[in-house]
Image 1 (cartoon, rainbow, N blue to C red):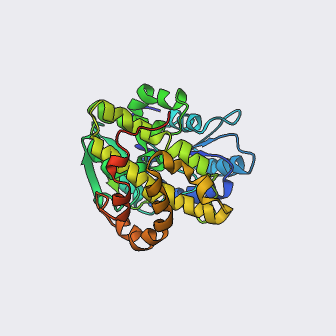
Image 2: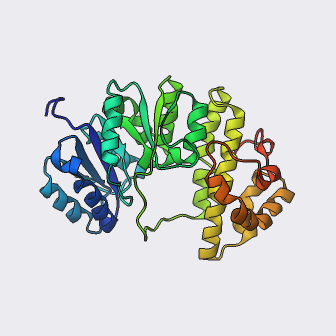
Image 3: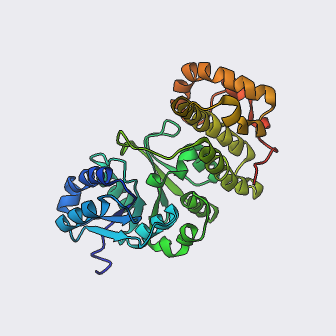
Length: 338
């Protein structure tokens, strides 16, 4: 296949034991006019040695669209980042976008993605897909600094469904997936691009949603060790090198705990009957003991009154009750456990 014949967009779908959801996702793509009538889009499915019907589903769609759907399967189960790499390495498109096997693709998104590629054909800008966030403007925005990108993308920069990389950049950056032991290689690549002077085009339109019934192995230990253990450390590195302002970093940690950890914790508590003191004790490492208990007691009231408002915020966390309870100064200088 010559470079002229290569597709413009590769939808790279790493998957494992989600055959039913994979079928729905593929249906969302192959029924769109731009996929059927042009050769601009391909789908790459990387199966992490599934034990369900994933292979049969993938081969069924590959048979229907042999020139547009590629299916690869690992010889044995591998760490998720290696499966992401496998999908990207088998892609042929100018832009290779990772996409979750359990998230739909709304009509019109593929056309929008092709337009983004067309407008950035010289591949000067990187592209990140933010799925309709209230934290940043609707449409497309340019993030030339790490401060802007962290403010707008926030914790969602860890989401693989938003990550895209130009085919020409894969050889230089693929080792982030194959040689790292943490969960956020895709985030590290985005930050490395900014560090090297690249601007990121942030596309903020709702382009898909997760199907009902998707189960995830989320525990308080996972939330603490992965999201609070790995993600802030990636950012802290750039605070130390002065590429990310300390106040932006501190605000991001606040967002992480207020908007993600605590709501997830309450969901897990209701589901698994967790103990406040035992399973939420990690927060004592970040705030004084009195604030810790105040947060536990007052969060339900906060969530009822303030959380909907924060979800509508455009760029900054408002100075709400919890901001006063554990302000930025509570985190800056405390560091994170390594």
